[in-house]
Length: 234
Image (cartoon, rainbow, N blue to C red; front, side, top):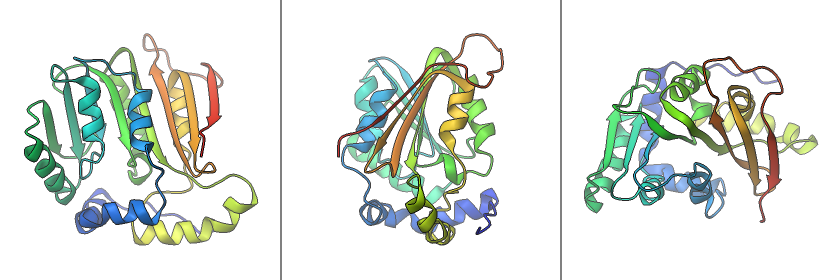
């Protein structure tokens, strides 16, 4: 098995600074399904006036859908470790004159939203963060009761085909996007939330999973919460 070594945050930031102008190309190269981003935002169940945070907002590809969901009376927060990615996101926001979008350069592990949140989205970012689970817990702590967290990302297909392409996937991620193909973020979300659901796209090579913040501070245990799973239409 090819080993995976997490890079430090400074390395991750430098890598994404260099890749900022190539993000659209990578979406094409990796066959990101059409409508995938809209589907992810829809799972958060946002309403006009809500507050939402995107962790790893990158160049702002999800911002239009998040802003549409919360309307003019809501607010969208975005945080990203890469200054190069954020430069492009800010240009997008300025071009559309979005006054209710706030973008912050920094580590999501340190970020604190200025108000309670109704939703948190990890947009192709969870598997790139070496401290992903700590960031998830911090995000959940900032949600209002019954707020939702969503992770959208790529994954290896299950079964023999996934095992065959694993070495290539590890090589590709190490040299490009730094997404750890060994972790299974949906397990983290399922463990830390209730009402967990996951939906797969494009022959199970992409997924959207979401969960609802559990009431109180009781730590989740194995098997708690409901589980729904489906394969989206191709």
